[in-house]
Image (cartoon, rainbow, N blue to C red):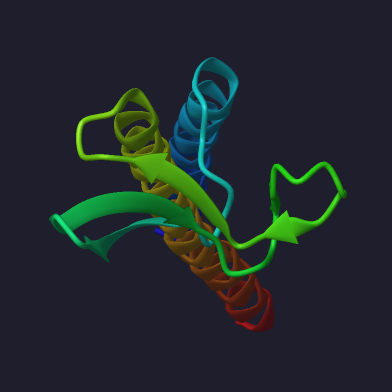
Length: 134
């Protein structure tokens, strides 16, 4: 009976490792084959008022300065101007942020599966020690 339980635990641990490997490969694929926004970036909409009216523009906003200012002085900014809705820069930034979010969600799933793997492995060790003491 104990041998069946150990085999079951080993099988579950192997299945968890296989699932983790699949998710890690997906992260590598996303990072290798597409532009991904840096961590902590998001697309923001802002309004500019002029004498002739109000206009909406978009910017990529980071938590830390990382974008060149364009001044040629080497300074960095938290913001990257993307232009109007539907511009290539705007659409590209939205797709990059979406890919970053996919990677973050895949990483959360990997963390969850890793916790489960530890649970199975420690359960196996605990059951092995109980079997020895009997």
